[in-house]
Length: 432
Ligand code: PMP
Image 1 (tube, rainbow, N blue to C red):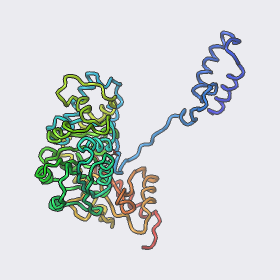
Image 2: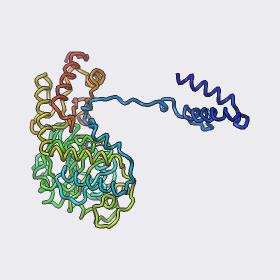
Image 3: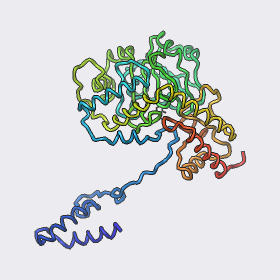
Image 4: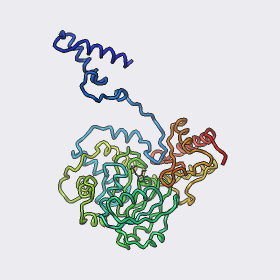
């Protein structure tokens, strides 16, 4: 149909030649035709790169149940908040929204830290913000690697010329405080992933803050995949820098990353000898932009993602209404219900130690004899549910199912258990 419309318009455009020869009544038509021609692929345009035809059609995005390790589904209330009218990123109302986001993050993190804000970017941006600001070239960092996020942190730290030391455990494992203390290195920063989404482990945190402070070291925690779904209290547990992502338990779209810095961390960061490598992620700038410093005015640093701030504010409001403890409890109960269902089906959980199982992202041993890709593909095609395979050290070894925020419900568990059972019936199984 569109092809014929374009053909007729094209005929009209070429037949008419120059506007000067047109009658008055026809000139209205030709103007319409010309503007449609422009929209329909710049037929009259002298440009050499034309828009592709598909770009001129609406793109229908399907409804899908997002039970992978993130992003999670975005509830209508958060999506509606994000669709509110645009404001300037330094307008009074935007600043008020940012202030409310800061308070929401302080509640979610359980911290009174003044320097608490949301980085404009995904979890990786917060990760780089934490590492770029807290470490100077040549300084030593100790990174606990029990999955891909420790590996990534090590690579980021290496790139800025830090002295990187790692302590590594096998996928599915974690470290005791004694094991951490036995690493005879005096780092400036110790990095640990709270919820390892690649392996499905929730790392114990108690006592590590004290241990770090005993050695005058900053304790840096990645809680992208765990925050809001399992207990963590930044101040009480002596965490100096912590960050998360918007798209997991918080159920906001990806693209903003809450982060907080203790006074101890700020002392170190604001007295650096060298400037952080990234202008965009420089904490002095960000702290001012978020009104966390003593300066009377907020200076333009970058254009914050205003619509994403509306969404993030709403997601933090939902968490506040739900209550952190209720959220932790629900994630735990739903995860245990899921784990029981999996074991009843004869599937095995990847993390042996029950108390180390991350309630937000479950890792299931890839069913022997099956190709995991066929299972995830079948579930997507037949049930319109996303679940995923492994990542980094767990690649090829596991299936991963995320039950985060509004997706953490027994009804969703029932759906995914049914989908898995059907997939195991219908996917090819070789003899093992
Ligand atoms: N850390 C952890 C524990 C994560 O699970 C993720 C995202 N899967 C990230 C960091 C990176 O977040 P993003 O993809 O938003 O950059």
